[in-house]
Image (cartoon, rainbow, N blue to C red):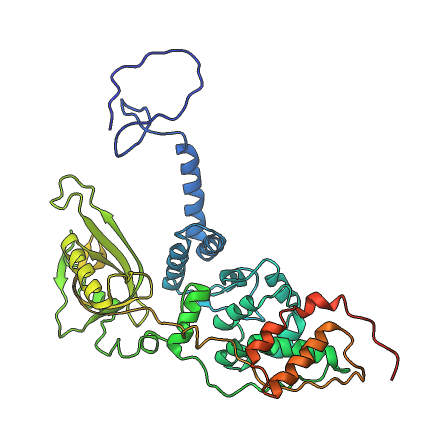
Length: 443
């Protein structure tokens, strides 16, 4: 800090922020100390109000924070969302995945113990898509959804996000069926509706029996579209990694309670179990305490969740962090990045400090990367061969139908591949609909 040597009154003038060449960079004048007090009153008022709301309306307060972060473009927004959800779950609140017939625009409180994820938490959901989806509910099936919503407002990427995050699970179809055939299904359904005289008839699309994505794949889709995986438990999502010897962090704290006023650390014996968990967040920082022997060195902190759902803070002191980075690089390669969702098995100790328990990492034993989605080749949109008859007793009355029928016949006769037909017909059916000629009255 900087001490004030002397003060001289110079009259009334416009004032500006002062800059002090000091790491603390604080400015106010009080008892001879220079630091900033320009926002102190407002900060104290805001702090009091938010503390009151969090104490008396915790669910509403955290939900409001969650909504704000979901609509934020800040780089740390995804991490903040996970932290808020972690706090909600630790207080007994269940965060439900999105549902096509129940979710609203954003997070919605169902009851005192339940929060429903909103559509704006998903990637690729445009401002047009969400109101369009909500306004046409309820939906009784995947076909009902595809019939009701506009293809102009709900693009195919939005549909992929809805499928991948589990919004359509209530329809009883596999996510893999819907995901791989969604584009072809929508196209052929649109053609069917343009040709049939009775649009109320069910459209019989022959979805192939191809099974479903694996639990790790579903989990990876949810992380991609939703920011966190909700399908399956840790044992299912990380097969052959977690085992029955995994330490329950909540039980660990009870078995090794704080016995000293200033805290203590105890190494976890190998016969007690293995410290295993999923990284929820990870960051490093430099030690600024000038009296510390590690002053200026980097150390790490992470929140880690055991396979039973209990979270705890994990500290990596400078030497242990260096060894950790080297072990990760050796095992996973130099380009591997430590991020939420990675699972680790490690040796360490339990540390008590001022009544709070945390873990200290000593040695990395094993590491597992994030669950992976299928490859791009495996997610390539698929098609089925399906003859769609024209029951309106008229010949094609517009360019679109002519192209559709011509490509269909070429495909069925093996003259061109389905991909070539798609390239030959890049026209959006909705864009051409307004240019259709009126139907003829001739038989």
